[in-house]
Each structure stands twice: as structure tokens, then as C-alpha cells.
Amino acid sequence: MTPQLPDRYGRTEVVLLIVHPLLLFAYWEATPESCRQAHETMGPEMDGARAVLRMYDITLINFDGANAHHVFDIDVGLEARGWYLPLWTADKSYCADLGFLARTGRFHTIARSNVIQTPRATPSGRTDEQWMRVRFSRRRKPEKRALEFVGAPGSGHQISAEEQHAQRERQQEDIAASLGEYLAGDAPSSKGFA
Image 1 (cartoon, rainbow, N blue to C red):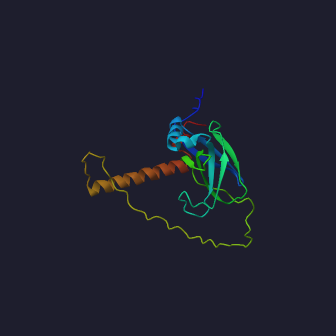
Image 2: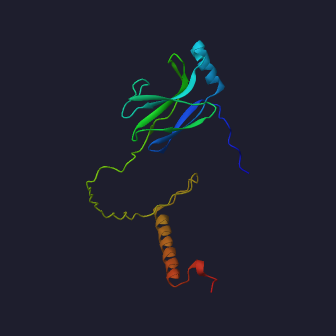
Image 3: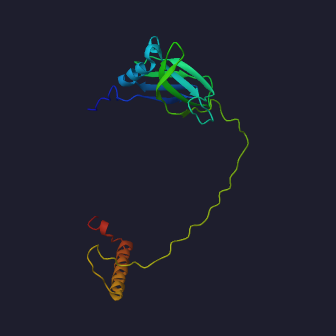
């Protein structure tokens, strides 16, 4: 059994998603608190105000809220919580404000979206060839170093250089014996099988 997704998350936000170069999808949530704050802020101008998604073309600029190349409004119903937005040009950067537009032209923002960059609608016009030379370099083999004995943490056990040398010799003998068994077909994993 999978849990149901909540109908609302309790935060005012608007998100833009790219569907293809000439189509966006916007989804939003407007909490009752943010709508009440808009009513309080706009006062009597809120009578007859429309919920709109104000789109900003902010291609190649550092957007400060008032310097967009183009601005256009799309009437939305807040209860719809999602809308497809057709565009007329591709390869642009957009963001949107969700808010209320009064009859007087005053706009009150309740949430600003993320910034998106739409892709090109046509293949690239660049037809020149670009070649790259890949140079391969040989990796140097790592240097062989003798293994060192390290006692278990907290053991305080120190062994002398002679004991370390004897342990290394025993390890090498064990490795040589295991290798001999493996090459003779007597590997430990194959014992007991016919």
C-alpha cells in the first residue's frame, strides 16, 4: 500500500517547469494566510482584483524585479493550482510572480518562482567542424613499499623490527603456498567439488 500524496503542503510557492522550448508548466499553492495578507495590503483595491501569473523575460540580465525585457500577465484561477503557459520565443530565461492585479493596475506579489532557461527550438546553426587531439599518457606503476605492522588501536603492543621481518617472511611464504595451490588446481574454493 502506497501512502497518498497530500493535497496541500501549507506553503505559498510557484514553480516553473519546461515542457518543451515553447511551452512551460507552472504549478502553485497559495495559503489562506498569504491571500489574507494580500487583502489587508491592497485594501479596497482588492475588490475586482484578478489572480494572475506575471511572467518576466529575464534573458541575460541580473533581474531586480523591475528590469525585465518583457512582462506579460496570464489570468489564472488559484484553485486550479497548475497551468500550461504557451510561449512565442524559445531560448529565453523566465521567472514568474503569482499575485493579484487590481483594476487600478497595482500588482501585489505573493510568491516568486524559480528561474528557468528554455532550450533552442531549432538545431544549432554552427556547422564548423571542431577536432580535438586526445593524448594518452601511460600511468606510472605505484611504487612497491613494504607493509608495516600496525597494532590494534588501544593495544599498546609494539613489536620489534625483527618480529616485523619474520611476519613479512611468513606472509610471503603463505602467499607463495596459496599461489602454488591455485596454479595446481587445488584452490580452496574448488576443494570438495568434482
